[in-house]
Structures are given as structure tokens and as C-alpha cells.
Image 1 (cartoon, one colour):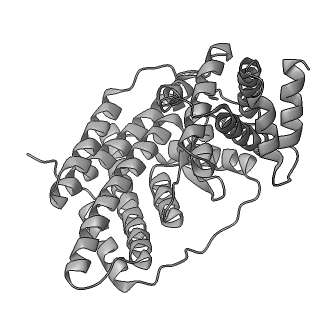
Image 2: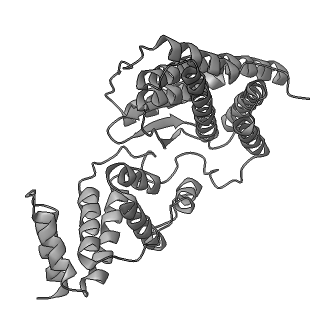
Length: 382
């Protein structure tokens, strides 16, 4: 039997048959023929290319494989993505950054051919059954719509924002973290205004784009609420896909970058504050509970969202006064563009009630932590 036919038989058995022993039978076929390794790798590249055509991106594949399978499968999919990359057309800096962030694809020494073949088939079964996702860009998947300015280097404002948030995450002093996060949000709002004015007067104005941001367990609902609050404060809209573990954020490129930075930073700060609050609870004789954490993060998201919006509105008003321009028409037109893009991508959405928010102590501590990380207007640190 030819190598190709052996792989075909294994796939017919493992990928399309739901019997309990189907995977073992197919793995035995592949393990018995070492010549199938190259053919298996080629088929894997085809599965990855098919995922790109269905709207998936490198970070999305790694995320879903990590959620559904194990570390060996993550290494395998990372290796397949790297192998496929030279065959792909250029897809922009955001895609390239995802390739650079891939986990180590080097496989550990195999224990036996049968186990390895079983793991490969489990991975391919998952890749085969991935649903189609909404294209992140109007037109062709993987490219950014707009004025073609995606290739620009990171601005000094974004570099400064990144540095401020890194300091906020690293400090052990809540008031310092508060001031640093506040300054970062003010810079984000002003950077967004600058980008809006620049685009409004450009010969080919930018159009909204989109990105996916992972919302990982545990306590995904509360984390999704926090991401939604960050997106809203930065002129973006977010739609959570609970089964696949991510939110799609729609907005203009500079605002998308701000959302990614601030959400990641606030999540780090929230988890650090939650750990400290839990330690205080245990010192008072209370055990660690799931409801405490869920309530803590829900309160944190609620309060942080309020503070974010207030800081963004104040900084935007100041920017408009300083520039002596009426920003309302510019910002309104961008808001309409973002909403239209969101509705084209997601013509039907539903709302979800936040579950498990029943712990009064968790809510109180989460609110207090958000106050420490709030992003209201403060004087920068001396």
C-alpha cells in the first residue's frame, strides 16, 4: 500500500469515524509505517492553510489547541504554522507579531511512534472541525482595511504608554500603579484624537479594523466584561465568543493597540490585587472561594470601566480645547464607522447575564482594587 493511501485510511478512520477505538486503530496504521511522517506533515500544512481561509489566525489556532488539547499538541501546531509561513503571502505586522510570539515548536524526544501518531491525529481532528470565523478585515482575510499605514513603526506615544503600563504592573504600591495607569489612559485618549484628526484630513482615510483577544479561564465572564469596558472607553466595540475563548474587538488601529495594552495590564494588576485580597481573607479565617474571585473580578471590571470612560472623556475634551477644533463630528463619524463594521461582522449578537457574583466581600475588595488602579485624571509622578 502506498504511503499516501495509508495516511488516507488513517484519516478516514480517525478524523471522520466517531467510534471509541477509531483513534487507536488509525494510530496503529501510521505507527507501522515510518514513511508516513513526511506525508503527515504535508497534510498538517494543508489543515493550517484551510484554517487561514476560514478566518483563523496563528494566535487563534494556538489558543484553541491549548484549550482543547495538551502541550504536545501546542508544540505541534506551532511547528506546522512556522512551516506554512514561508508559503503564505504577506499579511501585515499584526500577523507577523503573532508568528514571532508562537510557543516553542521543538518536539521533545518521542516515547513511541504509536503515541506520537495518536497526538497528531487528535490535533488534525480538531483542526478539521474548526468553524469558520468572521474575517477580521473587510474583503480579504488577514489584511487590514484602510489607508495602508499599518507598516508604520510604533509611535513614541505608544512606546511611552507601554512603558507606563509595565511600571504599573511591576510596582508594589497601589497609589503608584493608579497614577501610572491614569497617565497611560490619558495618553491613549490623546493619541486616539491625534490619529482621528490625522486620518480625517488624509487623502485616503483609515477604515476600522478588528483583532481577537484571548479571554482565558478561569472567570472568563468577568474578564470579558473588563475587556468590553476597556474597548468602550477607547472607541472600540467588543463581542465575546465564549465557546472559543476570545473577544473580537472592532475599532481603528491605534485604538485597537491601546485596548490590547490596557486590558492586558489591568488584568495583571487585577490578578495581583486579588491574590493579596485573598491572603487577607485567609488571615481573617476565611477560606479561598470561587465566588470570592468571581465577585472580585466582576466588581473590578465594573468600577474600572467607569473610571476609564471618565478619564478618556476628560482627556479628549482637553485635547479638543488645546487644538481649538470641534472633535465631535470627527469622533462621531468614526463611531458610526465602527458600529457599521461591527454590525456587518456580527449581524446577530446576544447579551449574557454575569453569573456567580454573590460574594459581598469579593465585590467590596474588587471595587477597592479598581479604585487603586483607576484611570481618572491625576498629576504625573514627580
